[in-house]
Length: 510
Image (cartoon, rainbow, N blue to C red; front, side):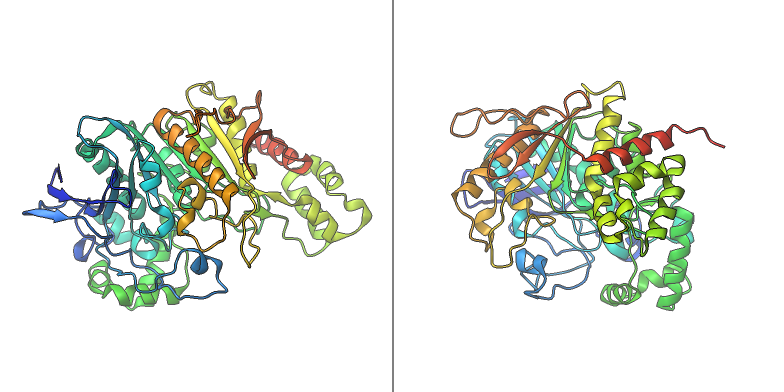
Protein backbone atom coordinates (compact mmCIF):
# COMPACT_ATOMS: atom_id res chain seq x y z
CA UNK A 1 0.00 0.00 0.00
CA UNK A 2 1.23 3.50 -0.84
CA UNK A 3 0.08 7.01 0.01
CA UNK A 4 -0.33 9.52 -2.83
CA UNK A 5 -1.57 13.09 -2.75
CA UNK A 6 -5.28 12.19 -2.67
CA UNK A 7 -5.26 9.12 -0.44
CA UNK A 8 -4.02 5.59 0.07
CA UNK A 9 -3.77 3.03 -2.75
CA UNK A 10 -3.57 -0.75 -2.46
CA UNK A 11 -1.96 -2.75 -5.27
CA UNK A 12 -1.54 -6.43 -6.01
CA UNK A 13 1.44 -8.67 -6.73
CA UNK A 14 1.96 -9.08 -10.48
CA UNK A 15 2.56 -12.51 -12.04
CA UNK A 16 6.08 -12.05 -10.70
CA UNK A 17 5.38 -11.35 -7.00
CA UNK A 18 8.49 -9.18 -6.83
CA UNK A 19 6.55 -6.63 -8.90
CA UNK A 20 3.53 -4.79 -7.52
CA UNK A 21 0.90 -3.49 -9.90
CA UNK A 22 -1.58 -0.69 -9.27
CA UNK A 23 -4.36 -0.39 -11.85
CA UNK A 24 -6.97 2.31 -12.20
CA UNK A 25 -5.54 5.18 -10.13
CA UNK A 26 -7.37 8.46 -10.92
CA UNK A 27 -5.14 11.41 -11.78
CA UNK A 28 -7.78 14.07 -12.55
CA UNK A 29 -11.46 14.77 -12.03
CA UNK A 30 -13.84 12.85 -14.31
CA UNK A 31 -14.07 14.76 -17.64
CA UNK A 32 -17.88 14.61 -17.67
CA UNK A 33 -20.65 17.19 -17.60
CA UNK A 34 -19.15 20.66 -17.40
CA UNK A 35 -15.67 19.09 -17.59
CA UNK A 36 -16.32 17.70 -21.06
CA UNK A 37 -14.01 19.55 -23.48
CA UNK A 38 -12.05 21.18 -20.69
CA UNK A 39 -8.45 20.70 -19.63
CA UNK A 40 -8.19 18.00 -16.92
CA UNK A 41 -9.40 19.42 -13.63
CA UNK A 42 -8.12 18.84 -10.07
CA UNK A 43 -9.65 15.83 -8.39
CA UNK A 44 -10.98 15.29 -4.89
CA UNK A 45 -9.39 13.09 -2.26
CA UNK A 46 -10.98 9.74 -1.49
CA UNK A 47 -11.76 8.22 1.88
CA UNK A 48 -10.31 4.94 2.99
CA UNK A 49 -8.11 2.76 0.79
CA UNK A 50 -8.48 2.70 -3.00
CA UNK A 51 -8.18 -0.86 -4.27
CA UNK A 52 -6.21 -0.46 -7.51
CA UNK A 53 -6.77 -4.02 -8.69
CA UNK A 54 -8.33 -3.65 -12.15
CA UNK A 55 -7.98 -1.42 -15.19
CA UNK A 56 -10.42 1.48 -15.25
CA UNK A 57 -12.92 1.80 -18.12
CA UNK A 58 -11.41 2.70 -21.47
CA UNK A 59 -12.02 6.04 -23.21
CA UNK A 60 -15.09 6.55 -25.39
CA UNK A 61 -14.36 5.12 -28.83
CA UNK A 62 -15.63 2.79 -31.51
CA UNK A 63 -16.58 -0.50 -29.93
CA UNK A 64 -14.40 -3.50 -30.71
CA UNK A 65 -15.79 -5.86 -33.32
CA UNK A 66 -13.94 -9.16 -33.45
CA UNK A 67 -12.92 -9.78 -37.05
CA UNK A 68 -10.32 -12.37 -37.99
CA UNK A 69 -9.68 -10.45 -41.21
CA UNK A 70 -8.53 -7.43 -39.19
CA UNK A 71 -4.97 -7.97 -38.02
CA UNK A 72 -5.37 -5.61 -35.07
CA UNK A 73 -8.40 -7.32 -33.54
CA UNK A 74 -6.64 -10.60 -34.24
CA UNK A 75 -3.51 -9.34 -32.54
CA UNK A 76 -4.64 -7.60 -29.35
CA UNK A 77 -8.06 -5.92 -29.50
CA UNK A 78 -9.50 -9.28 -28.52
CA UNK A 79 -12.05 -8.31 -25.87
CA UNK A 80 -15.25 -6.75 -27.21
CA UNK A 81 -16.65 -6.27 -23.70
CA UNK A 82 -14.09 -3.95 -22.11
CA UNK A 83 -15.95 -1.43 -19.93
CA UNK A 84 -16.08 1.99 -21.61
CA UNK A 85 -16.87 5.30 -19.91
CA UNK A 86 -16.34 9.00 -20.38
CA UNK A 87 -14.90 8.92 -16.85
CA UNK A 88 -11.54 7.58 -18.05
CA UNK A 89 -8.65 9.60 -16.60
CA UNK A 90 -6.80 6.85 -14.80
CA UNK A 91 -3.28 5.42 -14.88
CA UNK A 92 -1.53 2.18 -13.97
CA UNK A 93 1.78 1.55 -12.21
CA UNK A 94 4.13 -1.43 -12.06
CA UNK A 95 6.96 -1.11 -9.56
CA UNK A 96 9.74 -3.40 -8.36
CA UNK A 97 10.50 -1.11 -5.42
CA UNK A 98 10.19 -2.28 -1.82
CA UNK A 99 10.87 1.16 -0.32
CA UNK A 100 9.90 4.70 -1.22
CA UNK A 101 13.52 5.93 -1.23
CA UNK A 102 14.83 3.73 -4.07
CA UNK A 103 14.71 6.51 -6.70
CA UNK A 104 14.21 4.15 -9.63
CA UNK A 105 13.95 5.50 -13.20
CA UNK A 106 10.40 5.94 -14.49
CA UNK A 107 8.82 5.10 -17.86
CA UNK A 108 5.56 6.89 -18.75
CA UNK A 109 3.72 5.33 -21.72
CA UNK A 110 1.13 6.84 -24.10
CA UNK A 111 -0.69 4.20 -26.17
CA UNK A 112 -1.37 4.50 -29.91
CA UNK A 113 -4.49 4.22 -32.01
CA UNK A 114 -4.56 7.27 -34.22
CA UNK A 115 -5.89 9.41 -31.32
CA UNK A 116 -9.22 7.76 -32.15
CA UNK A 117 -9.03 4.38 -30.35
CA UNK A 118 -6.79 2.45 -27.96
CA UNK A 119 -6.39 1.85 -24.24
CA UNK A 120 -3.92 0.95 -21.51
CA UNK A 121 -5.48 -2.48 -20.94
CA UNK A 122 -4.17 -3.90 -24.24
CA UNK A 123 -2.21 -6.98 -23.27
CA UNK A 124 1.01 -5.98 -25.03
CA UNK A 125 1.35 -3.01 -22.64
CA UNK A 126 1.81 -5.11 -19.51
CA UNK A 127 4.63 -3.29 -17.73
CA UNK A 128 5.90 -6.20 -15.66
CA UNK A 129 8.85 -7.26 -17.82
CA UNK A 130 10.27 -3.74 -18.01
CA UNK A 131 9.68 -3.32 -14.26
CA UNK A 132 11.75 -6.46 -13.64
CA UNK A 133 14.70 -4.48 -14.99
CA UNK A 134 14.48 -1.91 -12.19
CA UNK A 135 12.07 0.52 -13.86
CA UNK A 136 8.80 1.96 -12.52
CA UNK A 137 6.35 1.74 -15.43
CA UNK A 138 3.28 3.97 -15.76
CA UNK A 139 0.66 3.74 -18.53
CA UNK A 140 -1.68 6.72 -18.87
CA UNK A 141 -5.17 6.73 -20.32
CA UNK A 142 -6.41 9.84 -22.15
CA UNK A 143 -9.42 11.14 -24.05
CA UNK A 144 -9.72 10.29 -27.74
CA UNK A 145 -11.48 11.37 -30.94
CA UNK A 146 -14.18 14.03 -30.54
CA UNK A 147 -14.03 13.73 -26.75
CA UNK A 148 -10.34 14.57 -26.69
CA UNK A 149 -9.76 16.81 -29.71
CA UNK A 150 -12.92 18.67 -30.67
CA UNK A 151 -12.65 22.48 -30.85
CA UNK A 152 -15.37 25.15 -30.89
CA UNK A 153 -15.42 28.96 -30.53
CA UNK A 154 -17.36 28.66 -27.26
CA UNK A 155 -14.72 26.35 -25.82
CA UNK A 156 -11.98 28.82 -26.81
CA UNK A 157 -13.88 31.75 -25.30
CA UNK A 158 -14.48 29.85 -22.08
CA UNK A 159 -10.88 28.65 -21.76
CA UNK A 160 -8.48 30.67 -23.95
CA UNK A 161 -5.42 29.16 -22.22
CA UNK A 162 -6.55 25.58 -22.92
CA UNK A 163 -8.87 25.67 -25.92
CA UNK A 164 -7.86 22.38 -27.56
CA UNK A 165 -5.84 19.15 -27.43
CA UNK A 166 -7.59 17.81 -24.33
CA UNK A 167 -6.22 14.32 -24.95
CA UNK A 168 -2.67 15.68 -24.95
CA UNK A 169 -3.45 17.73 -21.85
CA UNK A 170 -4.59 14.49 -20.20
CA UNK A 171 -1.22 12.92 -21.05
CA UNK A 172 0.49 16.01 -19.65
CA UNK A 173 -1.60 15.98 -16.47
CA UNK A 174 -0.92 12.28 -15.97
CA UNK A 175 2.81 12.87 -16.37
CA UNK A 176 2.64 15.79 -13.93
CA UNK A 177 0.86 13.48 -11.48
CA UNK A 178 3.73 11.03 -11.92
CA UNK A 179 6.25 13.77 -11.21
CA UNK A 180 4.42 14.68 -7.99
CA UNK A 181 3.62 11.16 -6.76
CA UNK A 182 5.97 8.57 -8.22
CA UNK A 183 8.36 8.73 -5.25
CA UNK A 184 5.65 6.94 -3.25
CA UNK A 185 6.18 3.96 -5.60
CA UNK A 186 9.98 4.10 -5.30
CA UNK A 187 10.43 6.14 -8.48
CA UNK A 188 12.63 9.16 -9.14
CA UNK A 189 10.59 12.20 -10.28
CA UNK A 190 13.73 13.65 -11.83
CA UNK A 191 14.34 10.59 -14.05
CA UNK A 192 11.18 10.33 -16.19
CA UNK A 193 11.18 8.98 -19.74
CA UNK A 194 8.03 9.47 -21.82
CA UNK A 195 7.34 7.00 -24.60
CA UNK A 196 4.70 6.01 -27.09
CA UNK A 197 4.05 4.23 -30.36
CA UNK A 198 2.14 5.36 -33.46
CA UNK A 199 -0.19 8.15 -32.27
CA UNK A 200 1.40 7.64 -28.86
CA UNK A 201 4.79 8.36 -30.46
CA UNK A 202 3.28 11.39 -32.15
CA UNK A 203 2.02 12.42 -28.72
CA UNK A 204 5.57 12.19 -27.37
CA UNK A 205 6.61 14.50 -30.21
CA UNK A 206 3.85 16.92 -29.24
CA UNK A 207 4.83 16.79 -25.56
CA UNK A 208 8.54 17.30 -26.39
CA UNK A 209 7.82 20.36 -28.50
CA UNK A 210 5.25 21.96 -26.20
CA UNK A 211 6.52 25.12 -24.50
CA UNK A 212 4.53 24.10 -21.41
CA UNK A 213 6.64 21.05 -20.50
CA UNK A 214 10.00 22.46 -19.49
CA UNK A 215 11.72 19.98 -17.18
CA UNK A 216 8.76 17.58 -17.00
CA UNK A 217 10.74 14.62 -18.42
CA UNK A 218 14.37 13.80 -19.13
CA UNK A 219 14.23 11.33 -22.05
CA UNK A 220 11.84 10.31 -24.82
CA UNK A 221 11.01 7.23 -26.91
CA UNK A 222 9.19 7.69 -30.24
CA UNK A 223 8.18 4.41 -31.88
CA UNK A 224 6.67 4.72 -35.38
CA UNK A 225 5.33 8.15 -34.54
CA UNK A 226 7.16 10.80 -36.54
CA UNK A 227 6.21 11.90 -40.05
CA UNK A 228 6.21 14.84 -42.44
CA UNK A 229 4.73 15.50 -45.86
CA UNK A 230 6.48 14.03 -48.87
CA UNK A 231 4.26 14.02 -51.94
CA UNK A 232 1.04 15.99 -52.59
CA UNK A 233 -2.30 14.23 -52.06
CA UNK A 234 -0.61 11.58 -49.90
CA UNK A 235 -2.17 11.19 -46.45
CA UNK A 236 -0.14 12.39 -43.46
CA UNK A 237 -1.58 12.50 -39.93
CA UNK A 238 -3.32 15.85 -39.53
CA UNK A 239 -1.14 17.78 -37.10
CA UNK A 240 -1.15 21.10 -38.89
CA UNK A 241 -4.78 22.06 -38.28
CA UNK A 242 -5.07 25.58 -36.89
CA UNK A 243 -7.38 26.41 -34.02
CA UNK A 244 -9.57 28.54 -36.27
CA UNK A 245 -9.97 25.67 -38.76
CA UNK A 246 -10.73 23.22 -35.96
CA UNK A 247 -13.25 25.61 -34.40
CA UNK A 248 -15.15 25.81 -37.69
CA UNK A 249 -15.15 22.04 -37.89
CA UNK A 250 -16.62 21.99 -34.38
CA UNK A 251 -19.36 24.42 -35.40
CA UNK A 252 -20.29 22.12 -38.28
CA UNK A 253 -20.26 19.09 -35.99
CA UNK A 254 -22.56 20.81 -33.47
CA UNK A 255 -24.90 21.56 -36.36
CA UNK A 256 -24.80 17.87 -37.28
CA UNK A 257 -25.61 16.99 -33.66
CA UNK A 258 -28.57 19.35 -33.67
CA UNK A 259 -27.31 21.47 -30.77
CA UNK A 260 -26.90 25.22 -30.74
CA UNK A 261 -24.56 25.73 -27.79
CA UNK A 262 -21.69 24.21 -25.83
CA UNK A 263 -24.04 23.84 -22.87
CA UNK A 264 -26.41 21.69 -24.92
CA UNK A 265 -23.55 19.61 -26.33
CA UNK A 266 -22.26 18.90 -22.83
CA UNK A 267 -25.66 17.54 -21.86
CA UNK A 268 -25.67 14.92 -24.59
CA UNK A 269 -25.34 11.30 -23.51
CA UNK A 270 -21.78 10.05 -23.98
CA UNK A 271 -22.82 6.95 -25.95
CA UNK A 272 -24.98 9.07 -28.23
CA UNK A 273 -22.14 11.55 -28.80
CA UNK A 274 -19.71 8.72 -29.56
CA UNK A 275 -22.07 7.13 -32.07
CA UNK A 276 -22.85 10.43 -33.79
CA UNK A 277 -19.13 11.24 -34.02
CA UNK A 278 -18.54 7.86 -35.68
CA UNK A 279 -21.42 8.53 -38.06
CA UNK A 280 -19.88 11.93 -38.86
CA UNK A 281 -16.70 10.12 -40.01
CA UNK A 282 -14.14 12.77 -39.20
CA UNK A 283 -10.57 12.64 -37.90
CA UNK A 284 -10.06 14.48 -34.61
CA UNK A 285 -6.44 15.20 -33.83
CA UNK A 286 -3.72 17.57 -32.68
CA UNK A 287 -4.43 21.27 -33.21
CA UNK A 288 -1.97 24.18 -33.36
CA UNK A 289 -3.64 26.19 -30.61
CA UNK A 290 -0.80 28.55 -29.66
CA UNK A 291 -0.90 27.22 -26.11
CA UNK A 292 0.00 23.56 -25.67
CA UNK A 293 0.88 23.21 -29.35
CA UNK A 294 2.82 26.25 -30.53
CA UNK A 295 3.41 24.98 -34.09
CA UNK A 296 3.68 21.85 -36.18
CA UNK A 297 5.42 19.41 -33.78
CA UNK A 298 7.68 17.89 -36.42
CA UNK A 299 8.87 21.27 -37.70
CA UNK A 300 9.55 22.37 -34.13
CA UNK A 301 11.48 19.15 -33.52
CA UNK A 302 13.65 19.68 -36.61
CA UNK A 303 14.25 23.31 -35.67
CA UNK A 304 15.25 22.17 -32.16
CA UNK A 305 12.34 24.05 -30.58
CA UNK A 306 12.00 21.21 -28.09
CA UNK A 307 13.34 19.72 -24.92
CA UNK A 308 17.03 19.03 -25.56
CA UNK A 309 17.05 15.45 -24.29
CA UNK A 310 18.14 12.00 -25.53
CA UNK A 311 15.64 10.31 -27.86
CA UNK A 312 15.24 6.71 -28.99
CA UNK A 313 13.24 6.56 -32.23
CA UNK A 314 12.58 4.20 -35.10
CA UNK A 315 10.13 2.11 -37.06
CA UNK A 316 9.41 -1.31 -38.54
CA UNK A 317 10.78 -2.13 -41.98
CA UNK A 318 7.45 -2.33 -43.80
CA UNK A 319 5.38 0.55 -42.45
CA UNK A 320 4.55 3.95 -43.96
CA UNK A 321 5.87 3.44 -47.46
CA UNK A 322 4.60 6.16 -49.76
CA UNK A 323 4.85 7.13 -53.42
CA UNK A 324 3.50 9.93 -55.64
CA UNK A 325 -0.24 10.03 -56.31
CA UNK A 326 0.15 10.31 -60.08
CA UNK A 327 -2.18 8.60 -62.57
CA UNK A 328 -0.06 9.40 -65.62
CA UNK A 329 3.55 10.13 -66.45
CA UNK A 330 2.59 13.72 -67.23
CA UNK A 331 1.11 14.11 -63.74
CA UNK A 332 4.32 12.75 -62.22
CA UNK A 333 6.42 15.21 -64.24
CA UNK A 334 4.15 18.12 -63.33
CA UNK A 335 4.33 17.19 -59.65
CA UNK A 336 8.14 17.13 -59.87
CA UNK A 337 8.24 20.62 -61.39
CA UNK A 338 5.89 21.99 -58.74
CA UNK A 339 7.84 20.42 -55.88
CA UNK A 340 11.44 20.71 -57.02
CA UNK A 341 11.56 23.45 -59.65
CA UNK A 342 14.87 23.46 -61.48
CA UNK A 343 15.83 20.20 -59.75
CA UNK A 344 12.84 18.33 -61.21
CA UNK A 345 14.95 16.64 -63.95
CA UNK A 346 17.22 15.15 -61.28
CA UNK A 347 14.24 13.62 -59.48
CA UNK A 348 12.75 12.29 -62.72
CA UNK A 349 16.07 10.73 -63.70
CA UNK A 350 16.33 9.03 -60.31
CA UNK A 351 12.83 7.64 -60.90
CA UNK A 352 13.99 6.31 -64.28
CA UNK A 353 11.08 7.93 -66.09
CA UNK A 354 12.98 7.65 -69.36
CA UNK A 355 11.73 4.13 -70.01
CA UNK A 356 8.15 5.44 -70.11
CA UNK A 357 6.70 2.96 -67.60
CA UNK A 358 4.68 4.81 -64.95
CA UNK A 359 4.47 1.92 -62.49
CA UNK A 360 8.25 1.47 -62.58
CA UNK A 361 8.78 5.21 -62.02
CA UNK A 362 6.36 5.28 -59.08
CA UNK A 363 8.08 2.27 -57.56
CA UNK A 364 11.45 4.00 -57.88
CA UNK A 365 9.96 7.08 -56.17
CA UNK A 366 8.60 4.98 -53.29
CA UNK A 367 10.23 5.73 -49.94
CA UNK A 368 9.44 5.24 -46.27
CA UNK A 369 7.79 8.43 -45.10
CA UNK A 370 8.79 7.68 -41.52
CA UNK A 371 12.46 7.11 -42.43
CA UNK A 372 12.43 10.40 -44.33
CA UNK A 373 11.23 12.22 -41.21
CA UNK A 374 13.74 10.53 -38.92
CA UNK A 375 16.70 11.23 -41.19
CA UNK A 376 15.61 14.88 -41.44
CA UNK A 377 15.52 15.02 -37.65
CA UNK A 378 18.95 13.39 -37.36
CA UNK A 379 20.56 15.77 -39.82
CA UNK A 380 18.95 18.77 -38.14
CA UNK A 381 20.07 17.52 -34.73
CA UNK A 382 23.64 17.09 -36.00
CA UNK A 383 23.62 20.70 -37.18
CA UNK A 384 21.86 22.11 -34.11
CA UNK A 385 24.88 22.63 -31.89
CA UNK A 386 23.26 20.30 -29.30
CA UNK A 387 23.97 16.77 -30.60
CA UNK A 388 25.82 15.63 -27.48
CA UNK A 389 22.97 16.88 -25.24
CA UNK A 390 20.26 15.26 -27.33
CA UNK A 391 21.58 12.08 -28.99
CA UNK A 392 19.16 10.26 -31.30
CA UNK A 393 19.31 6.46 -31.14
CA UNK A 394 17.75 5.13 -34.36
CA UNK A 395 16.40 1.60 -34.87
CA UNK A 396 14.73 -0.45 -37.60
CA UNK A 397 12.69 -3.54 -36.70
CA UNK A 398 13.01 -6.22 -39.38
CA UNK A 399 12.45 -9.54 -37.60
CA UNK A 400 10.70 -12.49 -39.21
CA UNK A 401 7.16 -12.64 -37.79
CA UNK A 402 5.53 -16.10 -37.74
CA UNK A 403 1.86 -16.89 -38.25
CA UNK A 404 -0.57 -18.23 -40.85
CA UNK A 405 -1.25 -14.68 -42.05
CA UNK A 406 2.42 -14.06 -43.01
CA UNK A 407 2.10 -10.44 -41.82
CA UNK A 408 5.63 -9.14 -42.26
CA UNK A 409 6.79 -6.39 -39.93
CA UNK A 410 3.39 -4.75 -39.72
CA UNK A 411 2.76 -1.49 -37.90
CA UNK A 412 2.89 -2.07 -34.10
CA UNK A 413 4.29 -5.62 -34.09
CA UNK A 414 7.48 -4.42 -32.40
CA UNK A 415 5.47 -3.66 -29.25
CA UNK A 416 5.45 -7.36 -28.36
CA UNK A 417 9.25 -7.20 -28.35
CA UNK A 418 9.96 -3.89 -26.60
CA UNK A 419 7.58 -4.82 -23.75
CA UNK A 420 8.79 -8.45 -23.89
CA UNK A 421 5.19 -9.70 -23.83
CA UNK A 422 5.49 -12.31 -26.60
CA UNK A 423 4.04 -15.00 -24.32
CA UNK A 424 0.68 -13.17 -24.43
CA UNK A 425 0.54 -13.38 -28.24
CA UNK A 426 -1.08 -16.17 -30.27
CA UNK A 427 1.80 -16.26 -32.76
CA UNK A 428 4.16 -19.28 -32.65
CA UNK A 429 7.23 -17.35 -31.58
CA UNK A 430 10.36 -19.44 -31.10
CA UNK A 431 13.59 -19.08 -29.18
CA UNK A 432 15.16 -16.51 -31.52
CA UNK A 433 12.16 -14.22 -31.05
CA UNK A 434 12.39 -14.44 -27.27
CA UNK A 435 16.13 -13.73 -27.45
CA UNK A 436 15.50 -10.66 -29.60
CA UNK A 437 12.71 -9.45 -27.32
CA UNK A 438 14.98 -9.79 -24.29
CA UNK A 439 17.62 -7.68 -26.00
CA UNK A 440 15.15 -5.05 -27.22
CA UNK A 441 13.62 -4.74 -23.76
CA UNK A 442 17.14 -4.46 -22.33
CA UNK A 443 18.04 -1.65 -24.72
CA UNK A 444 14.81 0.17 -23.93
CA UNK A 445 15.23 -0.25 -20.17
CA UNK A 446 18.86 0.91 -20.27
CA UNK A 447 17.81 3.99 -22.22
CA UNK A 448 15.05 4.73 -19.69
CA UNK A 449 17.57 4.40 -16.87
CA UNK A 450 20.47 6.40 -18.31
CA UNK A 451 19.66 7.94 -21.69
CA UNK A 452 22.03 5.39 -23.25
CA UNK A 453 20.66 2.00 -24.42
CA UNK A 454 23.95 0.14 -24.12
CA UNK A 455 24.84 -2.46 -21.53
CA UNK A 456 25.12 -6.17 -20.89
CA UNK A 457 22.53 -8.78 -21.67
CA UNK A 458 21.10 -10.79 -18.79
CA UNK A 459 23.60 -13.46 -19.82
CA UNK A 460 26.38 -11.07 -18.79
CA UNK A 461 27.58 -10.69 -22.37
CA UNK A 462 27.72 -7.10 -23.69
CA UNK A 463 25.02 -6.42 -26.27
CA UNK A 464 26.03 -5.00 -29.68
CA UNK A 465 27.07 -1.39 -29.15
CA UNK A 466 24.48 1.15 -30.30
CA UNK A 467 25.88 4.56 -31.25
CA UNK A 468 23.73 7.68 -31.66
CA UNK A 469 22.90 8.36 -35.28
CA UNK A 470 24.37 11.51 -36.79
CA UNK A 471 25.62 12.74 -40.16
CA UNK A 472 29.15 11.83 -38.99
CA UNK A 473 28.10 8.38 -37.71
CA UNK A 474 25.02 7.35 -39.77
CA UNK A 475 24.18 4.15 -37.93
CA UNK A 476 21.02 2.44 -36.75
CA UNK A 477 20.36 -0.68 -34.71
CA UNK A 478 18.79 -3.34 -36.90
CA UNK A 479 16.52 -5.68 -34.95
CA UNK A 480 16.40 -8.71 -37.25
CA UNK A 481 17.11 -12.25 -36.14
CA UNK A 482 19.36 -10.48 -33.66
CA UNK A 483 20.43 -6.93 -32.84
CA UNK A 484 23.11 -5.64 -35.22
CA UNK A 485 24.47 -2.15 -35.85
CA UNK A 486 24.15 -1.14 -39.49
CA UNK A 487 24.92 1.90 -41.59
CA UNK A 488 21.92 3.94 -42.68
CA UNK A 489 21.44 3.68 -46.43
CA UNK A 490 18.61 5.98 -47.49
CA UNK A 491 18.83 5.32 -51.21
CA UNK A 492 19.17 7.96 -53.95
CA UNK A 493 15.54 9.17 -54.05
CA UNK A 494 15.26 9.54 -50.29
CA UNK A 495 18.64 11.28 -50.14
CA UNK A 496 17.41 13.69 -52.85
CA UNK A 497 14.20 14.43 -50.91
CA UNK A 498 16.16 15.17 -47.74
CA UNK A 499 18.42 17.60 -49.62
CA UNK A 500 15.36 19.26 -51.12
CA UNK A 501 13.78 19.72 -47.69
CA UNK A 502 16.74 21.65 -46.35
CA UNK A 503 17.23 23.54 -49.60
CA UNK A 504 13.64 24.75 -49.47
CA UNK A 505 13.83 25.54 -45.76
CA UNK A 506 16.83 27.78 -46.42
CA UNK A 507 15.38 29.40 -49.55
CA UNK A 508 14.79 33.16 -49.30
CA UNK A 509 11.18 34.21 -48.81
CA UNK A 510 9.86 36.00 -51.90
